[in-house]
Image 1 (cartoon, rainbow, N blue to C red):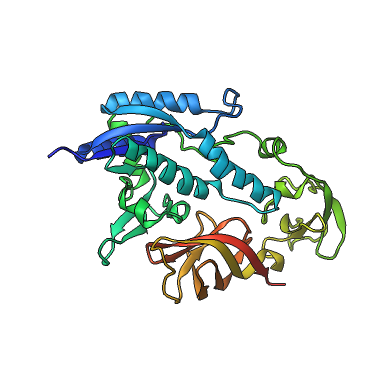
Image 2 (cartoon, rainbow, N blue to C red; image 1 turned 90 degrees about the horizontal axis):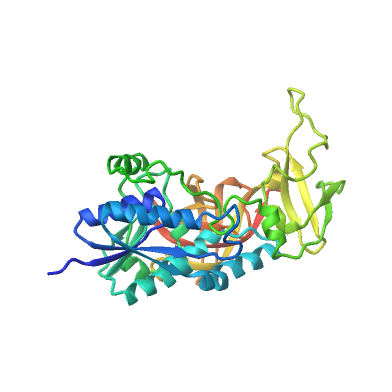
Length: 370
């Protein structure tokens, strides 16, 4: 019987590189596929695609797997980037990694892999898939390395996608992955993890958005209505933002030690084109006890039972208990036992039942404590 063919997304990073070796050790026929998802200003100082491709090819040579490249730039622009811009233009703060996983890595990539004759696909994500007690059903689980778990970004995957996906790193700690890469003498063993949004890279964020969005300056106000300055466009700010607001010299309230409390972005009034800022990390305008979410996606295909769960409203946040969860087919609302900080429209609210990721939705509104 011939080995199952697995098409693995190889990015040139250490995670997908070690995933390739692990799959080969497990007896799979492994084919690496490097995705090119961005072409605009591809030759400038911020783009690492060319070096990433060279790293991926070098690793494939060391491990002994075939590798090819595929261009999904058109699909990415239509399905991910266009939505990214729409959300920012509307004053929300989207998470393109969530959409990229659902639309590119586990849709366009999956379709392409199947055309290549793949039995399964695999990625270097830190997550796990488990066949549930219900025959033919699959569950998305957190990775064993809690500090690297990426189930938050994968919460829009469906049963068909999970049934054909392997996550070879789900049982490993990141330190083990680095150790394996070093022992194999992989050329990218010490390569830093990628950060930021894939198509933006390390370039200045405002400079990038300026190319694509229209914007209108407006007032920066306190909750009391005092004007502190002028913002450069609401799209360029996110709730909870502390740096880069442009009012660093403004002082009002002081702490007990005589220092001045920091300013934070607390609200955006789209209709009035006004940015509201508050002083102090625990200001009531920054704390929310409830939220609403739409564009809901459930991994099981149907909403989970209406009971108490835990949720994350941002990546790397600890699971927070929800004292009340109200579910419908297309929306849900959450009430937290403890107020949550800077709950941001456009970000994802993801529900968990222990280690099981149930799915989630896009935050549409949150109520502050005042």
